[in-house]
Image: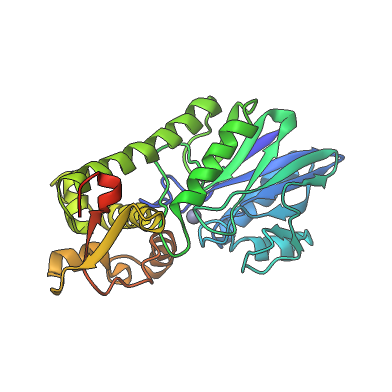
Length: 311
Ligand SMILES: [Zn+2]
């Protein structure tokens, strides 16, 4: 049995809050996936959920290092003595490296730990075959889409991760994501996520086929002229696509040679810590990669060989 315990940290980035999961692994053992932010009442709620089912938390696993998913692992481990499992490349303090593409065995239960780079490079998805379930962290959410932002995130690895889920886990029917509701039509959700990224990239390529664009111009063109607090996230998504296309030689960047105006600067380099409280700022900064400042304003154009034009 899987119990969703939602953390009390709602925000635009975390939707209604971070989803922590308590899994009854048999023999009285429970595994917690993504203990969430370090909020004492949330840790208490996880402990109460376990004891209400006469379970002892004997293992803790995190999908990725982000500050809305991992920090409660330490206090929960201190209170239960349970070891913390994480991706071998994860920088968060943990007791045991997950063996990627192998089973994590707790009690009577085996969960496959799938290497799932893209949102971050330390992201793991857990496959619970017994329940035909995937615990997808921030790779797939219950609603909306995920921010893929450099330098921690990368678009092509993310798309390969989605593709892998579609090809290798076609029998999965439930998605327990890191935020939002539980998804009961897993395959349709995976297909929706794959199609969404393809559509966005086609929109970018169609704009560049007409003329060269800066990232702020692409944001306005693709997402529309209505101002939105999510514009910095939109800009970083587009940057992630452009980095992938540049790496493949399909798009080239050239400096505009002028300084950014104020609107361009707030879109490309949001000063999150001036807008929201420190804890939320840490989450947004991690999700957007906005510690990476974009200094020069580039213009992006299609490479002639790809667009079919003569140089
Ligand atoms: Zn995240």
